[in-house]
Image (tube, rainbow, N blue to C red; front, side):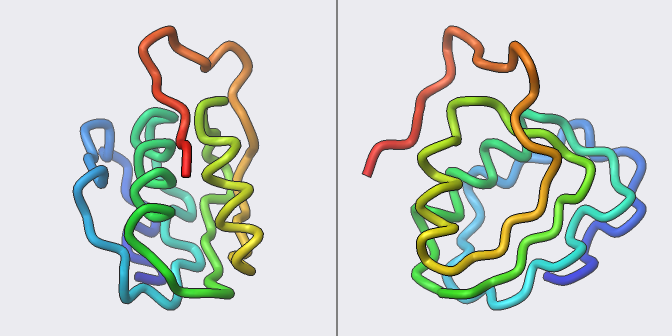
Length: 103
């Protein structure tokens, strides 16, 4: 999945929340120079932590922010050796209806 959405400019309705990331071994630069919403990226992180048991996978979302609800999911991926490069949490992105990942 490396470079999969590289440079994509219209991913406003991207929904990766039902994808199976179980076999993914490389997500470096997946969203490099792409336009992805905070919500879509956050949903993807939650789906990855639920569907992947892979370790030490690079995930490159260099300029994309996530919401605060995925802090535990991101920490879990990093504890598995994932190298998650993103822009961090978006200020005020903790919507009332978001569900925090819970193992």
